[in-house]
Length: 412
Image 1 (cartoon, one colour):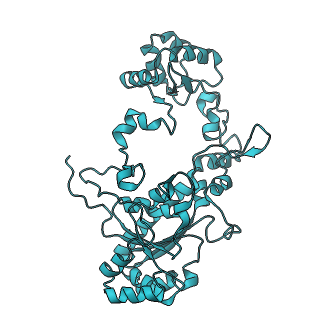
Image 2: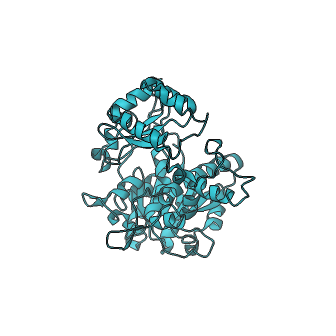
Image 3: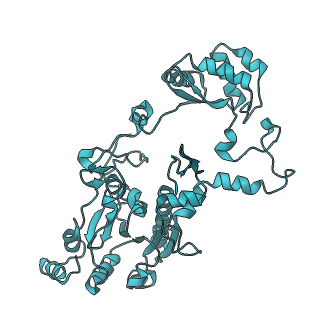
């Protein structure tokens, strides 16, 4: 199907965002999909531009990525004139995002109750570290705190005996914004249908726990008696540890060394196991160890594991992937974040957004919309880059009024 137009799916949705640091990612996907996201910054700006590494030509990659596609407007919300401009912007908006500790806008007289008086359809979303309630609501934090709180990783001991943070994928700081974007869109749909906006808040810590639901819910289920909650039939109903930890000792679902790297073998279904044994000319392996129909990892079968270890050495990783496609066997290459971009599936699906466009090579939003060409994404803004344009074009302020507001300090 040919592509038509370049108007994003969220064209016509306007978001006013007051954010600091990573939580600003809550509107990233919305901007990628065509929403008009106006980032309100204090005169000193969001110091995310100097946070973390790498720093690309003086600006952090984090800023370049999470604030791409947005407009930056400087307002001093401590000043009456700055608050007045903010209220004018809200009358033109669908959403206000408070991406910082809860209550910051309310303390400036710009909370949900005040905003809905001038725009009854406004959707007000607060995203914070630990949320607006609970004993940790005022606890300062950065992104990894939410993974630590949610039990995402286990501390390591380094060579000198010090406790160390292990390498792991950050969850809360990334999952929170995605949950938030989902909630925002639900709020906008409801507001446009009913005429009534809503107020919502979410915690990145909650998001980390919710994203890792399988482990915590498994532990919770295991609190019930074994007469009610068991393991798989293939394990003689013996309980395994939750999620990936329960994969330990697996053989038909395991990583193996190939001739030039590693491959993940996933023949936990009997049909896939038979396909594999037949295709490698070792049907006797299937006849000896047919396994159960579903979910059988042959845990602890070292004899089988030794056989498979030798078999997987006979092909390169690429060769095994081709084998899996040809013979209907679930296999996957074991990449690293550094090598992933060389994978042919990555090159086919995820075209880099170039540094010439965004300041650094970046991954696109992983959503493909048939028949619609996504509008180009703009580079993350410099501080106050769009202040004058937004005030003139969106609010209709003339040059004299903009100049007067600047002189009064409302614009920093």
